[in-house]
Image (tube, rainbow, N blue to C red; front, side):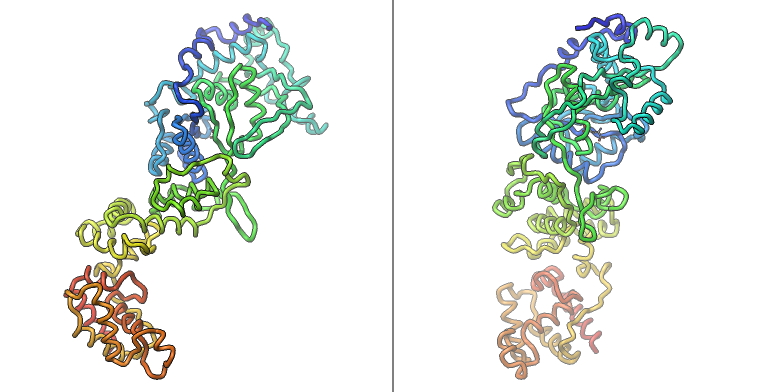
Length: 551
Ligand code: GLU
């Protein structure tokens, strides 16, 4: 092994701790065999998008399923991308969707866990200790090439159709001596530290990606930058050191990083680290004009988490949907395990879509409707009110003014074998409950056009006579039927169809007139229950109003 201690001391005179010191400070984790230790590692851009949430969800799920650890690391090596409170905004955004961490950054001033600090800008000395060792071993060197020189090299390589970058004969400083470096530094020249890549042209590497399967790629031959001019690391190098020292077992990230794996695996090797397992997630796709394209931050509102917040999708429903996107066999499992907690499902990387899961708004809504249909009336009330508090003041005050009344509305047609699925998101609630609140309802009646106004009035007048608040649910429909028959309607659609000229319509038409009179609508949940919630006074008042309108 080369001994370049002179060079190492020249470049890193203030770095006194060694890789061994850090190995000791951040020991192997005490987790059971097979535990997934993984991380979510955003840049502090403040912007959490659906793809980020999906990656976070996968990390959280994989760790939880194996009694592992899921931690949050903030990757702020690129200061240009940083926004104020960026980390906090992302942490908040994830938390809103139930993604919390076992350890990592908690806020810009606080960490939780034994592998702190979890923010890359607070770990500069650690990276430098490792680079110092690489320099000592002759595996890294200071490179004084100027931007102009690099641009010139690149131009030449382009002309000759060669791989662009600093490597082999283009690596002007790869053989630099400590004396020369000292002289250049004395002249005030700036430098970066580059890896002296052990890769050879034509060399290939193979690795198994947990999602994409066996992958073979060109080995890295570039003398990539490890430390920038200001001594801070590049993402590539920081990732290797951090994932090693934080004892990460699985790196789960977007597949835009797939092409960097040859660099990363080489860095693990030269540093003597055990390689991590990689799972590269394909971007979420969307169909458009018969084709497919990536969901885009710029074009698709559903890419921003604010879209889901404003619409008011319950977290549980979003999780259901995320799992559907994650594992193709989830829906089938759910169909057989309707009420089991989502964490009972056995998530696997192998079942993730290699080509990118397809985002489907209709499906999200269906899943969410189903999810909400299985909640109790109290849960629906709590979640809807919580959402309304931020997004719809009017709705919030109506719900809050009489909690019991609101819960009795949500209880209609709930809890049975076939609950109704009218609400996909909390922003649907206002429309759903509209006719229960005079403050919301405009009183318009949308009657079906099959009967004349005189017939409708006759039905309503007759119903007023038989209506009683004490009628039971069992008695109610037979009562309507009896009344219908007396008024000249067929008792069932079947009977009506057999001899349409003998009747004005059938019981369903009669009930429809009463429904529209009371709710304004042709389609509602159970009308009997609606009337019970409204009470006798309001029910009669509405029938009278409807009669007036029909005159
Ligand atoms: N900091 C990287 C990003 O912002 C994350 C890559 C990784 O997870 O390794 O995309």
